Amino acid sequence: MPLPRQILISELLRSRLRDELGQDLGVGHQVWMHPPCHRLLGWSSRPSAFGPRRSVWRLDQLVDWLEGQVEVEGEPADTEQPTLDLLPTLMEATLLGQQQQPLGRLVDAVVDVQSGRINHYLVARSDPRLPGSSRWRLEPDRLIDQQPGQVQAALQELDDLPLDRASIRQQMLRRSRQIRDQVPDSFDDFEGRLRSFGQRLWDGGEDLIERWRDEEPPVDERRSRPRSRDWDDPDDGEDPWI
Image (cartoon, rainbow, N blue to C red):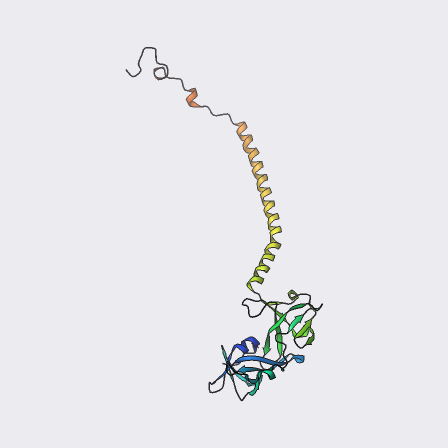
């Protein structure tokens, strides 16, 4: 499968590495980059779950991409975790706002595979390991300062950035805000319709009352019918059933 034009760093680190012969080389572990240029240089893998040994790969050694695994060519550079900790990276760096207030952390990035250039970072307010956490898109040119472990942008809040992926909670907040903005208009329309309906009902009621007044009252046939002497007023001493 040909390499995609762009990849997520998180997907690269979750993928298992294999060589041209299909040998398992471990799973992705950590990226290393050149922060001033916002460029990904490579990543490291962990050949086994135990031990300090790490394998470092250049980005140009990535030759194939499958779902959940990648193929690399050539030999890696072997090192240990204390050495990897010295490699520069902006991943997990704290994002500060214009007033030095913490806004979130850089938890992911979209990378151009051919050049290694980082197109944009993804920022999370909450713990990125929790499912459903929102991601905001941060362009590299919006960063005004960077130091080991933290970066700064001219932002007041994360909502100043475009939302790349909304969590369930964020979607509910946005929908409730939209509903709240629409409720006054809907209520005004409902009140107007109700008032109009009441006016029509009142006008129709007056017309109906006027028609009732103009019509003569119906005659009760039972009251106007002459009474039968045989049934209604029997003579004294006479039994109507005989």
